Length: 94
Image 1 (cartoon, rainbow, N blue to C red):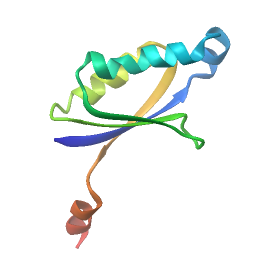
Image 2 (image 1 turned 90 degrees about the vertical axis):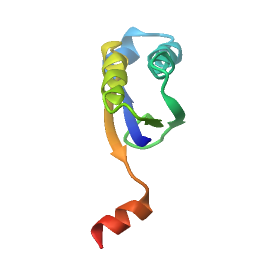
Image 3 (image 1 turned 120 degrees about the vertical axis):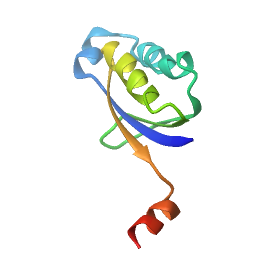
């Protein structure tokens, strides 16, 4: 099963348009449940991104679908990266 990380920032316009922003963020994150994504871990961040989500899937199209659904809601902007364990990466570069 492949692992992915999705980094998300709150759309600046959403901050002005949605007084109950937390509720709208939660609705956007429901795309993971709706698409039956497994191993989902959601983190808030104090860095460049507001939220980081780590998840797993065997269907490589699924991260695209989830990111698209989240972006279409207009509250969060996403970037998604495939992940591999450090040990596997170390073997690749030796």
